[in-house]
Structures are given as structure tokens and as C-alpha cells.
Length: 137
Image (tube, rainbow, N blue to C red; front, side, top):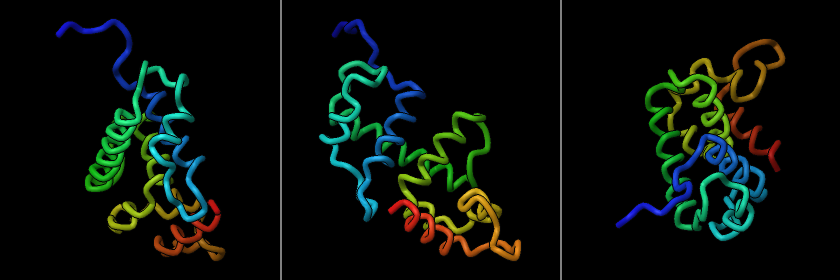
């Protein structure tokens, strides 16, 4: 089958836009938007042409898998600012996955909350995540 002209790959900007849309559109309970709602929100804004809801579902799954693998490896080790940006957005999209990797929070308290506790001490990561969820509501 011949390749049809056009852009059928995902750019870094597309990945960021997808994650940002999920964060922005998630409801107060943290439920993600439906694939149709996400598709409607992003239609015509992505560099990838003619991305279907199924394409978005696959991309979301792949970004989630990448986030999980990054946590398994102890956080973004390489790839510079791009991987760090995707990692930071993924933490907002999938905080439940972050909770499954407590070793990944060692030294990440400041990243998760932006500061240590009132006395300068490190804060319990689970509590920090709970606070972050409340702040998003």
C-alpha cells in the first residue's frame, strides 16, 4: 500500500498538547475526558493530520507506558528538556501511577510540591500528592 502524503507521525508539540488538554479537561475527581471530547478539543490543532479518536487513544496509552517506564528507571535520566516536560505533564495526568513507584519520589518532594514543609523538612510524598489533587480541584 502506498504511503499517502501528509504528516502521520506525532511531534513533541502534539504530545505536549495532548497531555495539557487532558490536564485542562479532567474533572474535579481527576477523571480524564472521553476520547471523543479530547478529539474534538484537539481537532485541527495537532501537527499530525487526521488524528482519529483511536489514534489519540493509542498515543495516550503510549505516553502512559513511557511515563511508567521512566518511573521504573528512577525518573527522566536523559533526553533533556523534552523528556522532562513530558514527565512533568504526565505526573499531572497520572498521579496514581506516580504513587505506585515510591522509590521515584526520593528527592522528588520538591518537584512534586515546589517546596519542603514549613520547617524546611521533606514532606511525605503521598501527602504531597493528595495536596496536589486538592489544589487541582
